[in-house]
Image (cartoon, rainbow, N blue to C red):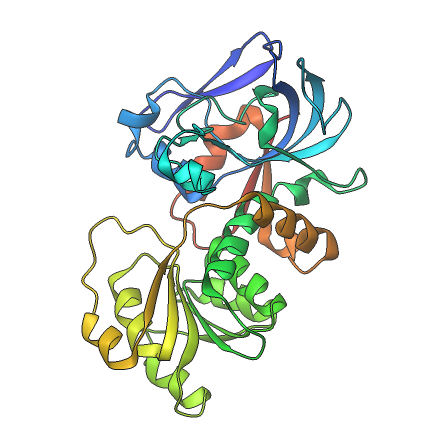
Length: 338
């Protein structure tokens, strides 16, 4: 089988590997498609070499077909179409004992801390697999992992139908958050600086604001009858985004921090006192977020066709990463592995 190893210096090496036999509690899956996410691009730029090393198969946004299972595996069988929830928890730390296994204090993220999905066959813990319908398109199924991120973000926000929502950042995750929030009954507006991403958001039916042309917070207050947004998602990872999130929030608004900021941002804590705001962290997903994501993708509430902008072969992985790097006109790029 072929596997693409990240080898440092913005490069990959394609190798012929032997598929690993699944041990007890494991499954071997044949990877169909694997998406490239922002974290993968951080790896590509060398920002995570200390953690990932320069000899690892990365990738985690995948769809697959079960090839074989080890002893004791129930719930999935050879031939099943599946997606992967790429988290391996310890089961013993205080977070795990409380049931918060997705924020395990010893969490291993598959595809970063272990081998990942950018290969033809992947052997991994069977508990990470979620079945999808047998007739589901596997390129669309590859979007379930990032959709699950959005489902977790929206669940953390406690969004109620009819509430006004501001999504700051219109990249792939921002658009997925917007679609999930809309499905939950939110009135969604997206703030984004890229004209191309604004056009995609508008194609998807969203109201948009360009912060280079308007004061987003002022516009949101005006649009909401001088009330502000009950829910704000900060997805941009930018300093202006941090400033906007508190300015645009309504009294007792909930702000969900989706983006990972490279530096500790300065936050206007006075607004939290004055308006009784809440700031909520959101990290990866829980099993129920995956089931919700599968439901939304299957139903068509997530416009996968619009989000998938290109598909490359596994052998062309280096070209795919290079083309995606800094490209504001790309949304979700997939690697076809098998």
